[in-house]
Length: 118
Image 1 (cartoon, one colour):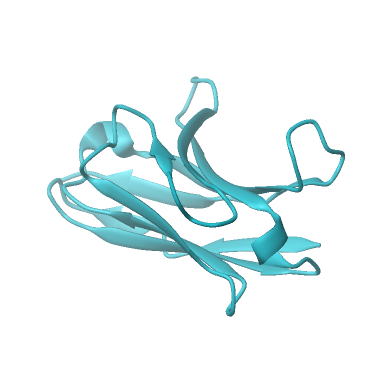
Image 2 (image 1 turned 180 degrees about the horizontal axis):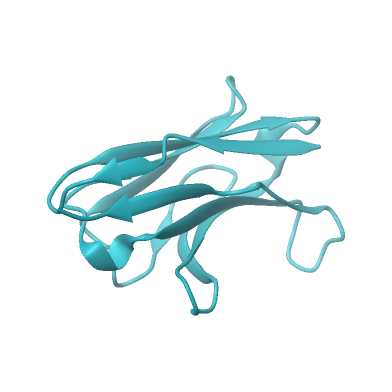
């Protein structure tokens, strides 16, 4: 199983980025997918969780109304559209695939750096 994030980079405040997480070795439609981020010297935090049916995607309060998470089960890829970016969004962003809560089938990507700065 491999999860590969892409799309990170340097962007000015107010700008946008779209992250992608390409999954291989698993059937994406059967996994709960989520995006996390970790800023320097901070705990890793959940940004968005995408259920298998892609309904009721949940978001951290800090990103509600600015970020949109989605999944394409045909392409085995999940996305995170990030708009109105702020300096405090600077972090390494990771995707995670979980077969179910507490399942040993729990995989992480290597992360992609997002830096929001003028």
